[in-house]
Image (cartoon, rainbow, N blue to C red; front, side, top):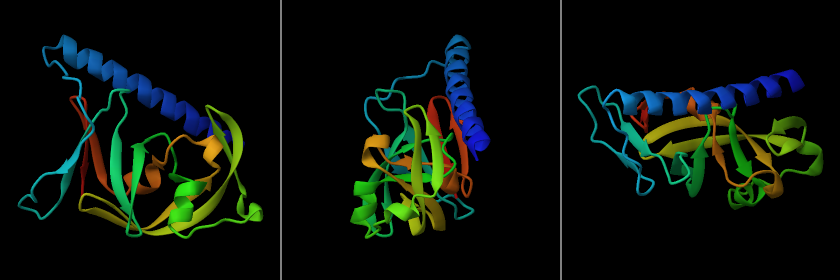
Length: 172
């Protein structure tokens, strides 16, 4: 498990480096990337195939922030392609009625903040502006171990996503 978490951290670092490289390359190729003034996750109209598209702009820190509905409750997330699953802070999980016991923290985590423990949970429905994924795996982590909720690969792997000229595009 430790090796997997180390690999996940390395993949996350590689993703950040690749993003910066692509932004630099796009700028040099005559496609300037305008910095986002604010975070947005505005869905486009449905296309001919009936799919949904959501385009996310980077925030001032260069991250993609999104408001989602988790089991009917609005929550803010940072999109993290290096996170293997959705990660909820304990305080946010409590808003959903999820209250892991100390014995539920069976997953060992490795982050930039060090090692820790997480409790696995199942979310019934996660929705980002019309893009909906059901029965999504997630983990609950102590508030002090995580500054904000993470929208990780347990959601992203079930939608089509791409990085295009400084924007993250989600499709379903």
